Length: 221
Image (cartoon, rainbow, N blue to C red; front, side, top):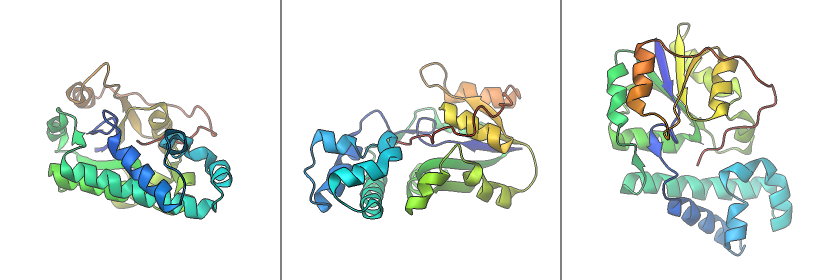
C-alpha cells in the first residue's frame, strides 16, 4: 500500500509562528521597492495568491515578476527557518515509523525545496519514495492541490496499487477524491498523527467523492 502525507499542518508545524513568513515577504517587497507594511505583506500571504494579478496591478509590477520575487524569497525564508530549527516538526512525527513497511510519499503545495529540506533535517528523506512540491513557475499556481496534476509524479513512480492520503484541509480530501485515493483527515485540534496512523493500520479511511470541479487550491503556509 502507498501512504501519502501532506506537509504543512500534518508533519510540519509551520503556522505556530509566522515570523519566517513575514521576513520572506518583507524581503520580496523590499526587492520590488514596495513599502513592507503589514497591509502590503498580507497581500502576498498564501491565501491571497488567487488574486495575484490584482495585487500586481496595485503594486505596479508585472505579475510574473511579482510571483518570481515572492516565491523565491518565500522559499528561502522557509527553508532557512526549517534548517535553523525555527520551524519544527510536530512532536509526534515519529508516528510515521509505524507505517514504514508501506511505501511513503509526500505531496505538498509548499515548494519542492521546502519538502526536501524538511525531510533532510528530520532524517526521514530515506523513508519517502516520492516527494512532490510545487515548482517556482507561475503556472504552478494552477496545478496546486486539489488539482490531480500533483499526483501524476507519484503514480508514475509507484504505479498501480492502493493509495491513502493524509491531509488537514478540505482541499486535501478533494485531492484524494480526484485521484481515487483513500483519505484520512488530520485536524490537530482533535487528533494526533499517532491516532491518524492507527486509522490507517485499521484501514479506517474514507473513500471521498468529488465535491466540485472548481474547488480553490489549498493554501500552504
